[in-house]
Length: 424
Image (cartoon, rainbow, N blue to C red; front, side, top):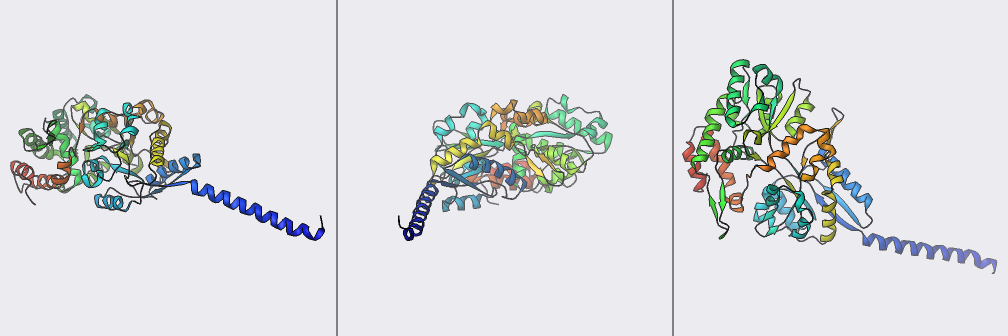
């Protein structure tokens, strides 16, 4: 070969190689499916960071799917707007929105995907994954409520919550604690807020009442809140437990109750697992314990967070693959490692798995005190039982019960106003 042709040929060879490499790389890029996954917490929050680590582990294991996690919240209007844009593929949503047509009608039916893991879920959780059109969500993580107590206060009063068998036992303990120690009893919620509804529903169900009932033949919803059982429950809450609640409880939310418990103003609070970790984090100088509400024959508020797919996603099979990963045992173990707290340089659990197969997991061996927060799944208080309730009654519920707590109206008037769908 002539010397003067060597260099041009080498350059041509390099150019051809570069072109082949470019075309190959570009072809591979086109094969990667991009998914967006929206959670209900801010992206850079400690919970967002913890979940994003799981997402990144999934991305590392894949060569055809890449997931981008975006932060969010539980705001109904924000969620509805996003579903209209078709920008998100996989959603993490509170179960109550599955009872809302504006949300559930935009979600993909997941009957087959659900059937793959159906036996892993508690019966009560299975029912919450279903809208009127069918299964639209896959259970992921959540909580039930427990009775959390300040053991230093209960010991001082000679009260042992492990012996509680009824709500009356709780009331008697509140009275004893107040008389013997000067501390208040159970922290109550009274403000016109969502917190009031889930708190009150537990008592209504526990007294034998119901919010609604659906006729299985006609599928018609009956509103049943205006009952003697509901009246008895609300009276017990306001006029009996209320005697021993924290000062100003009539205008308090769940956050205010946590503040009172943290400051040792009250001996008891009804909260999820965060009620325990809040005390671990705050450096409070008392021993915190918990029992299940079912031990007292009470119903427990449940707060399942579900995984759903937009019906307009262009990558449905990839989205299903990602959900399978998120609900695997190994993934749930990693999620249950918790969120990192910079101040205390430790990890703290924030939710528990909805998969009953996880009961013997490393997580519960490490944190056995959190087992009480799944027992409530066996006796759930469903605060958003039907679509009819979600769309027409839930806002009235908080408002009128709050008015009854303030003594602006009677309990009878409050329940009548809710049942008759009376405008505020």
